[in-house]
Amino acid sequence: MSRPDGSSPDEPLGPAEGAALLKPWIGRGAAYRGAVLAVSGGPDSTALMGCAALCGAGIPLVVATVDHGLRPASAAEAEEVAGLAARLGFAHRVLAWTGPKPPARLQEAARAARYRLLADLAREAGVDLVLTAHTLDDQAETVLMRLCAGSGPAGLAGMAPARALDGLTLGRPFLGIPKARLVATCEDQGWPFVRDPSNIDPRFGRARLRRLLPLLAEEGLTAERLARLAARLRRDEAALGDAAEAALSDLRRSDPGGEGRLVLDGTGLAALPEAVALRSIALAVVAFQGDAGRQGEAPAYPPRLERLERIVLGEILPALRQGLPCRRTVAGLLLAAGGGRLTLSPAPPRRPPGLHST
Image 1: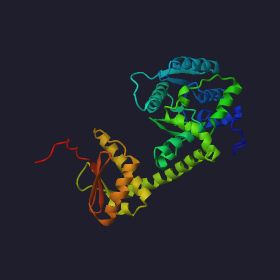
Image 2: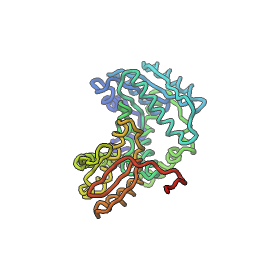
Image 3: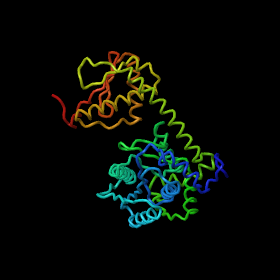
Image 4: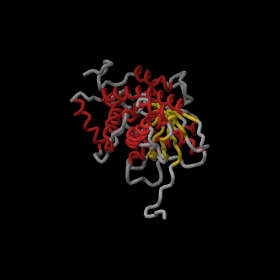
């Protein structure tokens, strides 16, 4: 069965199609100084490297393989990538994740380490772009994982085609391409690749969800539809974010109590649509944390959506509408409603258990 663009779900990428996908990122006239290609040796990233070689980059490129040291074969696989990179004309670096590995949430820690190592290499090489080979299937799995975790619209928006990465840009040129097409591309071009056994290891949630995708597709919930949902939510999230930023700017008030607090117009806040009010308060929390960080204090953790909804929608906004006082803590901050205002300030230290005033 063909896809909406007329291609087969397992049709190889032709040179022209690969070039069209990569040209905005690495073609002549691209806006970037150079790029790091993240290549693990799997079919997706191998296709990224091969297509970059075929299209002829207009900016400097370096290929990087992160060796997490989690499997005995990882070092040999990195060397195989180095060999193919050399045949394709690319410089190659192996980036090792050293040090102790956490016993829990290992894949999350590995992902954070991978991006940190890639960003460090990009800065060392004097380039400002990191490209990964995330696919349509990866996007669908991400949306499903976040749905299972109870994420809101921002989480269900999935992975963005481009995002900031520690002062650089992280790009995903293959985000709309099915994995099967990249596998077929490697096979058609004779580019060798490896298959990471962790991708089918049932210990990991993503691998378990991956097995469900064919069953969901039979009911109509295809990877394409999950990706389309993510794109729509990204669009709506951008509009909501703009509205919340504008509202927060209008709601800021001078603080008669001095520095160290953020004061908002409570009446105006309570009159906003709840989605905008919720996002405005979330932005205010982040803004206050940033101010605290600049003053040398340890910034608090970002607010969790569930707690923010429960406190803001269930308590703060009703109190503002009714003119009642309300004090709640969120992400290390005290939110105090009263007198037609909402004031954000550092939360007082918690009293140790068993310690009571006399």
